[in-house]
Image (cartoon, rainbow, N blue to C red; front, side, top):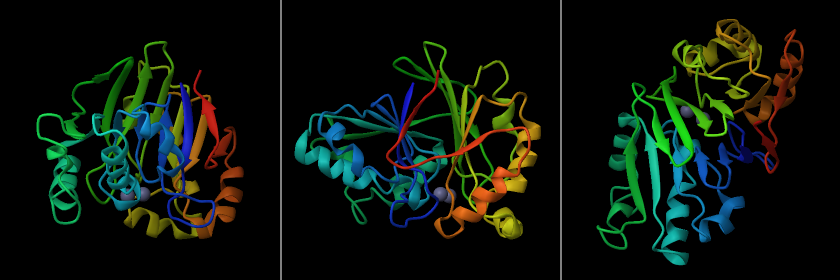
Length: 256
Ligand SMILES: [Zn+2]
Ligand SMILES: [Zn+2]
């Protein structure tokens, strides 16, 4: 799988954009920043968004993506997949014909540009050649992480926003997770703030590494709050026996 980083930060600053990861040009993991993907939107190559939770920084690209679809290719359909609470929040509070149109009725209810699909942690969901396994994580609102496994065996785990958590690491068992995208939002001296807001700092990540049944070959770090990036990077470099890589917007990596 080829993963293109459209955005990977936990806030916005010049060169740092809200989270969105494009898998093989067709599947989005979160949709905070879609500007780089506009050409693909026009070609309808992006068909599914796996949304981790209903916080603004993770979905704010979708309203404009749908706007662009209507303008450029109204026969396309984009499907948002997430847990039932997340879908309910997006429907009720965003695409409610007040904040933004209800795109499940546009251009017409039988062939809309937007549809929803609820994903349950109890059973895997199949999207073409991908098997998706959802897991609840520990954030301030209902939030899910996703294990994305391609038919070729290539396997990626994305936590989305989470504080210290358990279940998602259990889901790694029986899967050869080659790459992990995990969040680290704050530096170590803000550990109590990280815990209160459902996020990780480097020392908390160290604790999470101990819970994993095996350590993935590649661990990519996302969701750094822009003002603390250098400090977090220095603290991550001091975690022993593991190589952690900070994601950079606009770049891509391959999951073997
Ligand atoms: Zn976030
Ligand atoms: Zn969040």
